[in-house]
Length: 423
Image 1 (cartoon, helix red, strand yellow):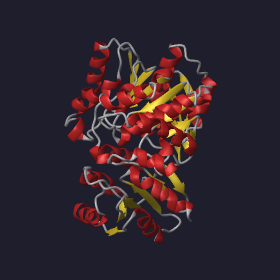
Image 2 (cartoon, one colour; image 1 turned 135 degrees about the vertical axis):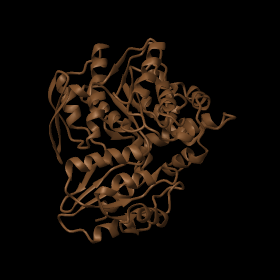
Image 3 (tube, rainbow, N blue to C red; image 1 turned 45 degrees about the vertical axis):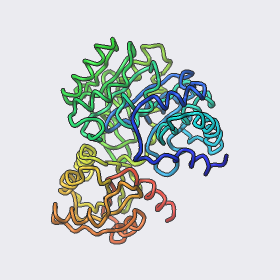
Image 4 (spheres, helix red, strand yellow; image 1 turned 135 degrees about the horizontal axis):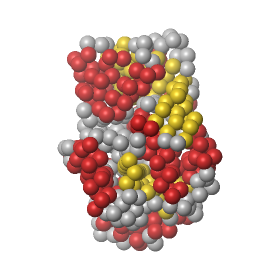
């Protein structure tokens, strides 16, 4: 099997045909020898922040000497990005070998697995073949019925910020969504939760109490921010002083508190993570597309904000780092998001918009988005076509002291990266 055939094997089911449930992925993994039972896991769920949290945890564990897998979604350019081993994307050869193994298993199944179930199973095979000691596993959607929830006893379950998203599937209230996310907590296994709305925390506390799972909740009152620059953030948390992260978004502070509390839980459980490994792991974390600086003079920032909560967090970052700037925004969205609220949140920072149509069947056409922006804000909005064309259009009129901010969908991050590579 070559790489293209491996991708065709993964994509044989359309994303929109995705069906929550564990029976198919469990059968697929069982036929593949249950590789997930041969590793330890840290399982990370949440509406926003789970990818950054997972990336920081994986960096710390790798620095501590553990052979570390990291499973995230979506990818920005290639499927390989979803499966990282000690900081490196899985090779094409290993993707092909794992796909060959799973193709034989799928052929024996009556109920064929979905795309996400296939890539999740493929990741488990790759991690087991690579000899991973631990895998940091990001939930795809929800938690309780997500394909990643095949693991039986995580070393720790991490619950990030909860907000309204995927409401047609997960529920239309914070409490209902929190119940789905809390489905990753397992009997007697410790959990860490970011401090957030009482509605979500009450669900987490109740779930952990019922499962006799020790719960640690982060303490923002014990966080002291010492410096925030475009090069990184310096802070104290609990008893630790002068911690540094290169991730500059305000919301990364909430995420890193969850990481630090998770490390404490792991240390208390006998994991060997030195303070030096913790600090170095945090400093070395890289995570693309989350208030990431792409260039300076002019300043270009890209953020994966793709729902109202993400837009609000982006607005807080802009208020912190660029309070006096009027910004050109490049925006593309999925049609199923509350993009009107996103527009209203970002509008106070905007000088103008360029709209794009991300490469997805779920995208809102850029012409319609431009119309809605002008209707909601009265600001100029120019349809820019696809992401690369829109990016070129947005950059044309920028002076050295201008700012371009790209947001609205993770699907456009990879296209922007490719456009920059071609410059």
